Image (cartoon, rainbow, N blue to C red; front, side):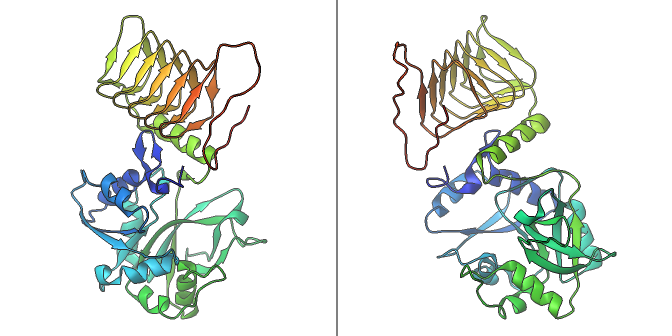
Length: 338
Protein backbone atom coordinates (compact mmCIF):
# COMPACT_ATOMS: atom_id res chain seq x y z
CA UNK A 1 0.00 0.00 0.00
CA UNK A 2 2.84 2.39 0.72
CA UNK A 3 3.89 2.33 -2.95
CA UNK A 4 0.87 4.56 -3.60
CA UNK A 5 0.29 6.30 -0.26
CA UNK A 6 2.54 7.67 2.47
CA UNK A 7 3.00 5.19 5.33
CA UNK A 8 1.80 7.85 7.77
CA UNK A 9 -1.56 7.94 5.99
CA UNK A 10 -2.40 4.24 6.27
CA UNK A 11 -5.64 4.15 8.28
CA UNK A 12 -6.04 2.64 11.73
CA UNK A 13 -9.69 2.51 12.83
CA UNK A 14 -10.43 4.65 9.76
CA UNK A 15 -8.11 7.49 10.76
CA UNK A 16 -4.68 8.13 9.21
CA UNK A 17 -1.87 7.27 11.60
CA UNK A 18 -0.61 10.86 11.40
CA UNK A 19 -3.87 12.08 12.97
CA UNK A 20 -3.08 10.11 16.14
CA UNK A 21 0.37 11.75 16.13
CA UNK A 22 -1.26 15.18 15.95
CA UNK A 23 -3.54 14.23 18.86
CA UNK A 24 -0.43 13.48 20.92
CA UNK A 25 1.27 16.76 20.01
CA UNK A 26 -1.82 18.82 20.82
CA UNK A 27 -1.93 17.40 24.38
CA UNK A 28 1.30 19.19 25.36
CA UNK A 29 0.33 22.65 24.17
CA UNK A 30 2.57 22.83 21.09
CA UNK A 31 1.08 25.15 18.47
CA UNK A 32 3.81 25.43 15.79
CA UNK A 33 4.26 22.14 13.94
CA UNK A 34 6.76 21.54 11.15
CA UNK A 35 5.98 18.58 8.87
CA UNK A 36 8.87 17.12 6.89
CA UNK A 37 7.49 16.08 3.49
CA UNK A 38 8.89 14.40 0.40
CA UNK A 39 8.31 15.48 -3.21
CA UNK A 40 6.32 12.28 -3.89
CA UNK A 41 3.85 12.25 -1.00
CA UNK A 42 3.91 15.83 0.29
CA UNK A 43 0.62 16.64 -1.41
CA UNK A 44 -1.08 13.67 0.26
CA UNK A 45 0.18 14.75 3.68
CA UNK A 46 -1.05 18.32 3.19
CA UNK A 47 -4.47 17.08 2.12
CA UNK A 48 -4.75 14.73 5.11
CA UNK A 49 -4.02 17.59 7.54
CA UNK A 50 -6.07 20.25 5.73
CA UNK A 51 -9.00 20.08 8.18
CA UNK A 52 -6.63 20.87 11.09
CA UNK A 53 -9.02 20.32 14.03
CA UNK A 54 -6.05 20.79 16.37
CA UNK A 55 -5.64 24.47 15.45
CA UNK A 56 -1.92 24.09 14.67
CA UNK A 57 0.17 26.52 12.70
CA UNK A 58 1.62 24.12 10.13
CA UNK A 59 4.86 24.62 8.21
CA UNK A 60 5.50 22.06 5.47
CA UNK A 61 9.23 21.56 5.01
CA UNK A 62 10.47 19.80 1.89
CA UNK A 63 13.20 17.18 2.20
CA UNK A 64 14.21 16.62 -1.41
CA UNK A 65 15.82 13.23 -0.76
CA UNK A 66 15.50 10.71 2.11
CA UNK A 67 18.92 11.39 3.61
CA UNK A 68 18.10 10.43 7.20
CA UNK A 69 16.41 11.76 10.31
CA UNK A 70 19.30 14.02 11.26
CA UNK A 71 19.17 15.47 7.75
CA UNK A 72 15.46 16.14 8.31
CA UNK A 73 16.40 18.22 11.36
CA UNK A 74 18.97 20.08 9.24
CA UNK A 75 16.40 21.06 6.62
CA UNK A 76 14.05 22.18 9.41
CA UNK A 77 16.65 24.35 11.15
CA UNK A 78 15.21 27.66 9.91
CA UNK A 79 11.83 26.62 11.33
CA UNK A 80 13.30 25.34 14.63
CA UNK A 81 15.60 28.35 15.20
CA UNK A 82 17.20 28.11 18.66
CA UNK A 83 14.21 26.56 20.39
CA UNK A 84 14.00 23.18 22.13
CA UNK A 85 11.73 20.88 20.14
CA UNK A 86 9.84 17.60 19.99
CA UNK A 87 10.71 15.22 17.15
CA UNK A 88 7.97 12.67 16.49
CA UNK A 89 8.17 10.08 13.70
CA UNK A 90 4.84 10.15 11.92
CA UNK A 91 4.16 6.40 11.82
CA UNK A 92 4.30 5.76 15.58
CA UNK A 93 1.29 4.77 17.66
CA UNK A 94 1.64 4.75 21.44
CA UNK A 95 -0.86 3.99 24.18
CA UNK A 96 -0.26 6.92 26.53
CA UNK A 97 0.05 10.65 26.02
CA UNK A 98 3.43 12.37 26.12
CA UNK A 99 2.59 14.99 28.75
CA UNK A 100 4.82 13.43 31.45
CA UNK A 101 7.64 12.97 28.90
CA UNK A 102 7.61 16.68 28.02
CA UNK A 103 7.22 17.78 31.65
CA UNK A 104 10.28 15.77 32.70
CA UNK A 105 12.34 17.30 29.88
CA UNK A 106 11.32 20.82 30.89
CA UNK A 107 12.10 20.12 34.55
CA UNK A 108 15.45 18.32 34.25
CA UNK A 109 16.67 20.24 31.15
CA UNK A 110 18.97 17.64 29.58
CA UNK A 111 20.46 18.15 26.12
CA UNK A 112 18.12 15.42 24.83
CA UNK A 113 15.53 12.96 26.08
CA UNK A 114 14.59 9.72 24.33
CA UNK A 115 11.40 7.73 24.69
CA UNK A 116 12.16 4.03 25.18
CA UNK A 117 10.07 0.87 25.38
CA UNK A 118 10.94 -2.61 26.64
CA UNK A 119 10.69 -5.10 23.77
CA UNK A 120 10.96 -8.87 23.44
CA UNK A 121 13.46 -8.85 20.58
CA UNK A 122 15.80 -5.85 20.91
CA UNK A 123 17.98 -7.14 18.06
CA UNK A 124 15.36 -5.71 15.69
CA UNK A 125 15.66 -2.12 16.98
CA UNK A 126 17.96 0.67 17.94
CA UNK A 127 18.70 -0.02 21.62
CA UNK A 128 19.75 2.21 24.52
CA UNK A 129 22.00 1.35 27.44
CA UNK A 130 21.16 3.41 30.53
CA UNK A 131 22.64 3.87 34.00
CA UNK A 132 20.85 3.66 37.35
CA UNK A 133 19.68 7.28 37.14
CA UNK A 134 18.08 6.88 33.71
CA UNK A 135 20.89 8.61 31.83
CA UNK A 136 21.70 7.23 28.38
CA UNK A 137 25.20 5.71 28.25
CA UNK A 138 25.23 4.62 24.60
CA UNK A 139 23.02 3.76 21.65
CA UNK A 140 23.42 0.66 19.47
CA UNK A 141 21.60 0.03 16.19
CA UNK A 142 20.17 -3.53 15.85
CA UNK A 143 22.84 -5.13 18.06
CA UNK A 144 23.69 -8.84 17.85
CA UNK A 145 24.26 -8.75 21.64
CA UNK A 146 21.85 -6.11 22.97
CA UNK A 147 23.05 -4.20 26.06
CA UNK A 148 19.41 -3.88 27.18
CA UNK A 149 15.84 -4.57 26.08
CA UNK A 150 15.04 -0.85 25.72
CA UNK A 151 14.20 0.10 22.14
CA UNK A 152 14.09 3.61 20.69
CA UNK A 153 10.46 4.42 19.97
CA UNK A 154 11.12 7.28 17.55
CA UNK A 155 9.97 10.16 19.77
CA UNK A 156 12.63 12.59 21.00
CA UNK A 157 13.04 15.92 22.77
CA UNK A 158 16.06 18.05 21.91
CA UNK A 159 17.76 21.22 23.04
CA UNK A 160 19.27 23.39 20.26
CA UNK A 161 22.67 21.74 20.89
CA UNK A 162 21.60 18.85 18.64
CA UNK A 163 22.21 21.10 15.60
CA UNK A 164 25.88 21.37 16.58
CA UNK A 165 26.38 17.60 16.69
CA UNK A 166 24.41 16.98 13.49
CA UNK A 167 26.88 19.29 11.73
CA UNK A 168 29.74 17.09 12.98
CA UNK A 169 28.53 13.63 11.92
CA UNK A 170 29.13 11.80 8.64
CA UNK A 171 26.65 9.73 6.63
CA UNK A 172 26.24 6.13 7.76
CA UNK A 173 26.75 3.04 5.59
CA UNK A 174 23.19 3.68 4.33
CA UNK A 175 24.26 7.08 3.05
CA UNK A 176 22.08 8.82 5.64
CA UNK A 177 22.69 11.20 8.52
CA UNK A 178 21.45 9.20 11.50
CA UNK A 179 19.85 10.91 14.48
CA UNK A 180 21.32 8.19 16.72
CA UNK A 181 24.83 9.23 15.59
CA UNK A 182 24.06 12.84 16.50
CA UNK A 183 22.82 11.76 19.94
CA UNK A 184 25.88 9.56 20.42
CA UNK A 185 28.02 12.60 19.61
CA UNK A 186 26.28 14.45 22.47
CA UNK A 187 27.22 11.55 24.75
CA UNK A 188 30.83 11.63 23.51
CA UNK A 189 30.94 15.27 24.62
CA UNK A 190 29.70 14.28 28.09
CA UNK A 191 26.36 16.02 27.56
CA UNK A 192 23.38 14.69 29.51
CA UNK A 193 20.90 12.59 27.53
CA UNK A 194 18.01 11.24 29.59
CA UNK A 195 15.67 8.32 29.01
CA UNK A 196 11.94 8.07 29.58
CA UNK A 197 10.31 4.62 29.64
CA UNK A 198 6.99 4.14 27.89
CA UNK A 199 4.79 2.01 30.16
CA UNK A 200 1.94 1.23 27.78
CA UNK A 201 1.86 -0.14 24.23
CA UNK A 202 3.87 0.97 21.24
CA UNK A 203 2.96 -0.22 17.76
CA UNK A 204 4.96 0.10 14.59
CA UNK A 205 2.73 -0.24 11.52
CA UNK A 206 5.31 -1.39 8.99
CA UNK A 207 3.87 -4.84 8.27
CA UNK A 208 0.43 -6.35 7.77
CA UNK A 209 0.22 -8.04 11.17
CA UNK A 210 1.46 -4.87 12.89
CA UNK A 211 -1.28 -2.87 11.16
CA UNK A 212 -3.95 -5.39 12.16
CA UNK A 213 -2.73 -5.33 15.77
CA UNK A 214 -2.77 -1.53 15.79
CA UNK A 215 -6.30 -1.58 14.41
CA UNK A 216 -7.36 -4.08 17.09
CA UNK A 217 -5.86 -2.10 19.96
CA UNK A 218 -7.26 1.26 18.82
CA UNK A 219 -10.74 -0.16 18.18
CA UNK A 220 -10.64 -1.82 21.59
CA UNK A 221 -9.63 1.33 23.44
CA UNK A 222 -11.13 4.24 21.53
CA UNK A 223 -14.27 3.23 19.65
CA UNK A 224 -17.64 3.91 21.27
CA UNK A 225 -21.10 2.99 20.04
CA UNK A 226 -22.40 5.66 17.67
CA UNK A 227 -24.77 4.85 14.82
CA UNK A 228 -25.03 7.82 12.47
CA UNK A 229 -25.85 5.76 9.37
CA UNK A 230 -28.86 3.62 8.49
CA UNK A 231 -29.59 0.19 9.98
CA UNK A 232 -32.63 -1.66 8.60
CA UNK A 233 -34.99 -3.82 10.68
CA UNK A 234 -33.42 -7.04 9.39
CA UNK A 235 -29.99 -6.11 10.76
CA UNK A 236 -28.38 -6.38 14.16
CA UNK A 237 -25.63 -4.16 15.53
CA UNK A 238 -24.03 -5.48 18.71
CA UNK A 239 -21.51 -3.75 20.96
CA UNK A 240 -19.25 -0.77 20.30
CA UNK A 241 -19.75 0.03 16.62
CA UNK A 242 -19.11 3.39 14.97
CA UNK A 243 -21.26 3.76 11.86
CA UNK A 244 -20.54 6.94 9.89
CA UNK A 245 -23.12 9.13 8.21
CA UNK A 246 -24.34 7.77 4.87
CA UNK A 247 -23.35 4.18 5.67
CA UNK A 248 -26.09 1.55 5.22
CA UNK A 249 -26.51 -1.80 6.92
CA UNK A 250 -29.01 -4.11 5.20
CA UNK A 251 -29.85 -7.61 6.38
CA UNK A 252 -26.51 -7.92 8.17
CA UNK A 253 -24.97 -8.42 11.59
CA UNK A 254 -22.23 -6.11 12.87
CA UNK A 255 -20.43 -7.16 16.03
CA UNK A 256 -18.09 -4.62 17.60
CA UNK A 257 -15.69 -3.20 18.20
CA UNK A 258 -15.86 -2.08 14.58
CA UNK A 259 -15.68 1.12 12.55
CA UNK A 260 -17.56 1.59 9.27
CA UNK A 261 -16.90 4.61 7.07
CA UNK A 262 -19.09 7.06 5.20
CA UNK A 263 -21.08 5.81 2.20
CA UNK A 264 -20.23 2.16 2.81
CA UNK A 265 -23.00 -0.37 2.09
CA UNK A 266 -23.12 -3.76 3.82
CA UNK A 267 -25.70 -6.27 2.57
CA UNK A 268 -26.38 -9.81 3.75
CA UNK A 269 -23.07 -10.00 5.58
CA UNK A 270 -21.45 -10.55 8.96
CA UNK A 271 -18.83 -8.07 10.15
CA UNK A 272 -16.99 -9.44 13.17
CA UNK A 273 -14.94 -7.74 15.89
CA UNK A 274 -11.81 -5.71 15.22
CA UNK A 275 -12.73 -4.77 11.68
CA UNK A 276 -12.55 -1.31 10.15
CA UNK A 277 -14.07 -0.60 6.75
CA UNK A 278 -13.24 2.63 4.95
CA UNK A 279 -15.46 5.02 3.03
CA UNK A 280 -17.59 4.07 0.01
CA UNK A 281 -16.91 0.34 0.21
CA UNK A 282 -19.37 -2.44 -0.60
CA UNK A 283 -19.59 -5.70 1.35
CA UNK A 284 -22.12 -8.23 0.04
CA UNK A 285 -22.91 -11.81 1.10
CA UNK A 286 -19.60 -12.08 2.95
CA UNK A 287 -18.16 -12.65 6.41
CA UNK A 288 -15.28 -10.49 7.68
CA UNK A 289 -13.39 -10.42 10.95
CA UNK A 290 -10.18 -8.82 12.30
CA UNK A 291 -9.49 -7.00 9.04
CA UNK A 292 -8.73 -3.57 7.64
CA UNK A 293 -10.64 -2.67 4.48
CA UNK A 294 -9.63 0.59 2.81
CA UNK A 295 -11.75 3.12 0.91
CA UNK A 296 -13.66 1.98 -2.14
CA UNK A 297 -13.00 -1.73 -1.74
CA UNK A 298 -15.61 -4.28 -2.85
CA UNK A 299 -15.96 -7.72 -1.24
CA UNK A 300 -18.69 -10.03 -2.51
CA UNK A 301 -19.63 -13.68 -1.97
CA UNK A 302 -16.69 -14.48 0.31
CA UNK A 303 -17.51 -17.14 2.90
CA UNK A 304 -14.90 -15.99 5.41
CA UNK A 305 -12.19 -13.34 5.32
CA UNK A 306 -10.06 -12.75 8.42
CA UNK A 307 -6.70 -11.29 9.43
CA UNK A 308 -6.62 -9.42 6.13
CA UNK A 309 -5.79 -6.01 4.73
CA UNK A 310 -7.59 -5.02 1.52
CA UNK A 311 -6.34 -1.92 -0.30
CA UNK A 312 -8.18 1.00 -1.85
CA UNK A 313 -10.63 0.10 -4.62
CA UNK A 314 -9.54 -3.53 -4.47
CA UNK A 315 -12.06 -6.23 -5.40
CA UNK A 316 -12.30 -9.59 -3.63
CA UNK A 317 -15.08 -11.78 -5.01
CA UNK A 318 -16.22 -15.38 -5.07
CA UNK A 319 -17.54 -17.09 -8.20
CA UNK A 320 -20.34 -19.60 -8.45
CA UNK A 321 -18.77 -22.31 -10.56
CA UNK A 322 -17.69 -25.92 -10.27
CA UNK A 323 -14.08 -25.30 -11.26
CA UNK A 324 -11.63 -24.96 -8.39
CA UNK A 325 -9.32 -22.79 -10.51
CA UNK A 326 -8.54 -19.31 -9.21
CA UNK A 327 -9.06 -16.20 -11.33
CA UNK A 328 -6.99 -13.29 -10.13
CA UNK A 329 -6.14 -9.74 -11.20
CA UNK A 330 -3.70 -8.31 -8.67
CA UNK A 331 -1.29 -5.39 -8.68
CA UNK A 332 2.42 -5.06 -8.04
CA UNK A 333 3.71 -6.32 -4.68
CA UNK A 334 0.35 -7.88 -3.82
CA UNK A 335 0.12 -10.98 -1.64
CA UNK A 336 -2.55 -13.67 -1.96
CA UNK A 337 -2.83 -16.54 0.51
CA UNK A 338 -5.24 -19.34 -0.43
